[in-house]
Image (cartoon, rainbow, N blue to C red; front, top):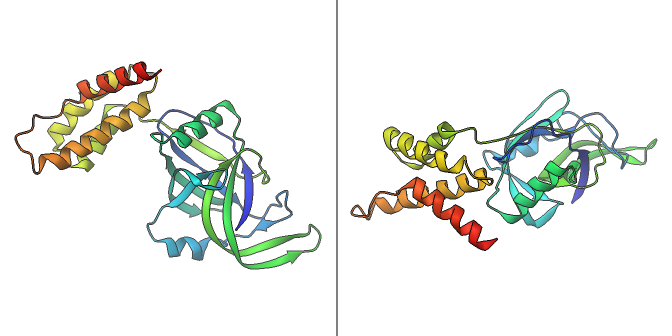
Length: 234
């Protein structure tokens, strides 16, 4: 598998792990002497269907940090959007390093399907590639690609939407999200807490189908319990 890196230019970095940007730029020469032509990813991405593209840290298959869930080819390059899974240790590490400016690039992992040699650079003109993954890396090679945004869970409405997707009624989701957000919003680890609360709610929703006598889950108590557990572990 080959790699091609690009600098990480963060315009916005908050807490949810939502990330958008240019994963690969077109028609510019990177430090390896390679250039990617428009359409190079079209066949590969079409073949993925709705399957997310793995998001890794430093191209390490043992260190997944999230997934790229949507993409489109623009005049500038391959624009992607995805989610960093902040419940995972490596994803939290990547987020912290990116925020501190220690992770300075994005890089694609790919296999070459069609290419022409570039005698003037010693590299290759990449006509068609099979895109395998997109990584956050330390040292960039392509000066064109950048991250456009890393967005946060903005409030109770975002949590409400996720709870509704998990199976709660509109009224239940609204009440639970409002209670959870009041507690979560006071935490220094708001997004990690939100993720844990949402995971807990999803599990409880599944259990409610077979355990109707079980008391209804209290999101505010769950958020407090998680905060107390983190404090004890510090």
